[in-house]
Length: 340
Image (tube, rainbow, N blue to C red; front, side, top):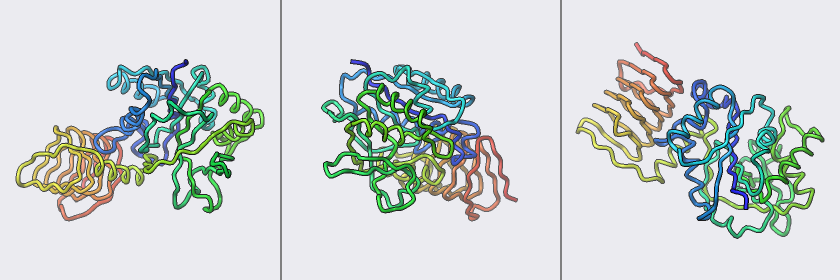
């Protein structure tokens, strides 16, 4: 049996996460004390025991092709990872087609900003040709939706629907029993030139698979988290802090901690109030400040300011004169703000 390939496209420009993604690829942006990629890789710990697994990362030129392999070599040297560079942003199917030499046998495709609570162990007994993880949402127009037939199988996928009648969103994770069949469907998609806004979306390739008789079923997830925008990442930060164990920090009496928080042991905090829903990275210095519902990446300095609903990139410096002044900020790595 071919090893299971876990394919993670991460080559987009991540414009909705700027300015954080000017200096690092989106999967390496911090959330709840770790990177989004750390939490994504955690999801696959529930795969059937004994399965051979290889990863295929489709990265962007520049930041992605340098920082992602370095991060994996340092943090996950035991994982086998193949890297494919997508130089032209021509869509999801195009990204997968570039990786076609690795797509033999079973595969999982999961977008890099998709986090969910699921147990992959059921795949050991899975008989369908494909599985799409789904969740009902209030407004599906930002996503794709699955049409289900009377037998409970997926009949058709619709990318970015115009109406809200069908709320069964596909969350961005799929299993295919034969990666070769998906590659053939993508080739047919390209021959038909099935594009949306000049991009080849995976939904069209999957619809071709369904046209050819593939049996695909939905698998509902109770929790679907997103790290594709700043607002969504802050929301994900809140959820992870509330539902994951984090060690209780120990600080002097002049520091007030309001859980849940994730504070790196190498952070220094004085005369401040931290929390709730705050993630603070290594090397941060917080003095005479109030931080609430925010993410501070490593090396951040905050003095005499109050932050709420904020995302602060690595090594940023924020200095004020009034800790009661509440600011809502999204600033990137190595930035400086001085409030006079």
